[in-house]
Amino acid sequence: MRADAREVQRNAIANCSWLHVTPKPTVVFFPSGKPGSGANTFPVALTCDVDCSYVVRVERISGHSTTREVRGRATGGVGKRIRFAPTRIAPGTYRLTLTATASENAGAPAVRTSATFVVPPSR
Image (tube, one colour):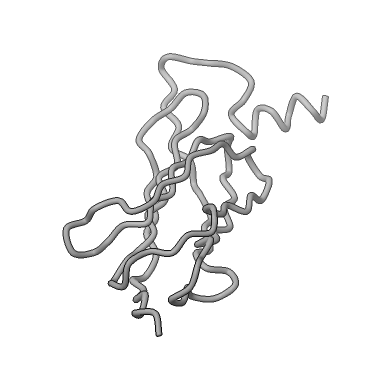
């Protein structure tokens, strides 16, 4: 009975064409601090209230171009640590953008953005 109730809370029990669910993600960008000029993993801590699919982008502010992107799934109510493969990006001003969509009964996506951060030139 408890397992069934938990699946209902996670929106994982049934697909209903009339139900449109938008997840309510709790997001912490850079839980270990802002990136520097070296290789970075751009960590994000995510907890969705329902099962969700996510896309996290490293977006260059000038031009709004996507520099890096990672996709995945998160189980509702369970914390997920998201990391990019260690990578160096060009000096400039960036932000992270997370888009989360319910895995079942998908409604409008939830979008969260980080504060801007600057990647300084290498020394």
